[in-house]
Image 1 (tube, rainbow, N blue to C red):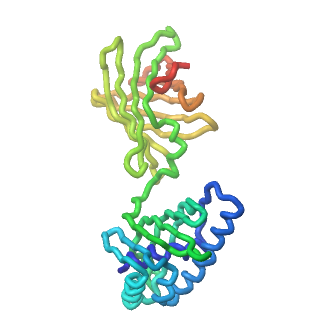
Image 2: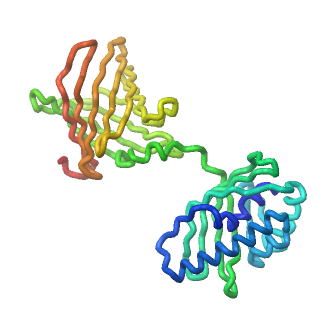
Image 3: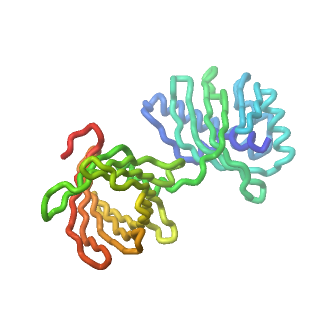
Length: 308
C-alpha cells in the first residue's frame, strides 16, 4: 500500500508543481484551475490521513493500479486501501514532479509525472512514474484512474541535450587541405543510449570502397570536471578521449588518441552546424608521435540528403 499513497495524491501536487500546458484556451484554463482547486482539498485530506475524504476525490468506479500490479477498483476499495496505508504510515508526505497536464476533451484531462514518498521524518521512500486521468462529472473534476510504472533511472540528458542534432545516420568525406582530395569516407550512426545518458556513435571508415577501420564512440557527461567527454575505441586497437565545449553555434573537441603500438596522436576538432542535415568538422593542430600533420576539413550530411 506504500505505492498507493505515492501516486493517488497526484492532484495534490498541482497546487505547487510546475505544469506543462499544451494548446489550452481560456475556457480550458478555467477547467485546469478547477482541477487545481480540487487538488488543494485532496492535499488537505491526505495530510490529515482522512481516507474517506481522499477517496471522495475519485469517481465511483475509479481505478488505481500500482507498478507491482496491485489493483484497487472502485471508490470503496480505494478508501479501504488508504485506511490501511494511513494506519501504517502516519505523517507520510508526497512530492511530485508534474511533467504535463492537459485537456484531451472538455471533460477529460491527462496528467503524467513522477512521485516520491517520504515518511513523517522526511526519509525518502517509494518513487514511481504515473499517468492519471481526470474526468468532470456534474461540474466537478474527479480522478478516474491512476496507473503506475517504475521510476526512470537518473539521466544526464540535461547536460547532453545540445547534442540532439547529432542523432541519426551520417556520411562524410575527409579532405586534406593541401591536396583537396578525398582520403576517407566515413559512415556514422548516432543514437541515444537507454535513458539518454550517452550519445553512442558507431562508425565505419572506407577508402576506395574498402573498410579500413570501424569503431564506437560514447559521448557523456563527466561530472568530476563538469564537462562533456567522449571515449572512442576502434578496430585497430586505438583508444581516444575527447573534451567537448560549446562556443556559440560551434563545438570544439580536443582529442588525444593512443594507438595500438603506443604512439600518441592529438588534434582539435571544430564542428560547425549548418542545419539539421549538414555540418562540418575542421581538424587542426594534428600531431602524431610529436610530428605535425596537415589540417583536414570534413563535410558531413545525413543519409538521403545532398552533400553541401
